Length: 472
Image 1: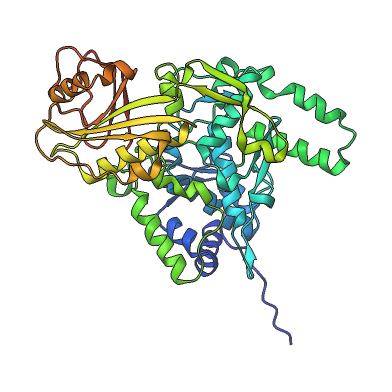
Image 2: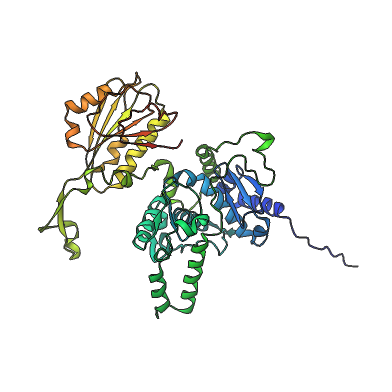
């Protein structure tokens, strides 16, 4: 008599456990990160999503329909949003096109490229076809609303967002007035979505008439447009409150208040685990450089302040020599470069971590402009260092050794700036500090304050030009 064992379907919990086990065997980097997430069943969402507290909300019916490789892929997708600090980095990036956030599209492009780039001989990671899926060839590419995003591996989410924003604003997209980081925009579709030309209707008409496209190409393009309209397969609700705990309604385990997870040490340990197992993750490129990349959109802040808008002249008698060997002649450009004056508070209240963030932002600004002249001054109760950095020389910025450690006052700094006449050659001073300083009654130059760490906005003077807060 033959013994027949009936195969039983695994529960969603068991399938997730099996997926996490296989990730540990094949993709240890992702597996270690996922172990730091909390999974909560939530039928109020269609698919799944994470919040900034490390909680992953999922609809069991959505997960049931996924193959094993897709389930592994979506778990990796969700945890990467957190590990790469997409909730924080999305602050202030609020362009909504027909109910879909351009920031959400940008981060999905990067994350999906990263997930799909990881392959082993035992199997690959996959994603649901409802996702925004880039082509992996030549460092990744995808077409969004007629905008070609290529070399994805070499681009950060911020760069992709800015590319999309430029394209969409040309087609009538609107930017929300109030920051709503991580919001999908579905609730604002009628009032603030920039409907009409923001969807890129002209491009759709052109594609529909393109006789060079095969039926298969046209089908893929239409599927991709549909995915974009839905905003991908996951829910980017990064702003869930600590008390929102799915069905339980409790603020974390045992009623404890939840805190945001510090992913920096976790991702470092995850990388070590992966390297020891010979499984270094692929596809990160510049996005993984998030720990060396600033979060401030310097172009937006400085566009109306610094001299980047100054007149430039074009000289055809002196063409650009770099392109002459290729029989390309463009005029030589002359004119003022972007000039930015920085001061860094190096008093005893500033930690090493905060100093690191300040220098990261200076490097970020240097990368944001083609031709930039920087002057970096360090101070506590007196001025210590004065560095001039031409052409945005990043190596020279990174070589700066700040001095200080004493009390806190900006009065000697402004006196020094006036003495050196730096207030004549620069439009603005960018002061990097915690805000606990002594200030003059009247500044000798307009000042933007960049705050980090345990800072105080209230202690800043009323004459401040602008305040930018770096999230810790």
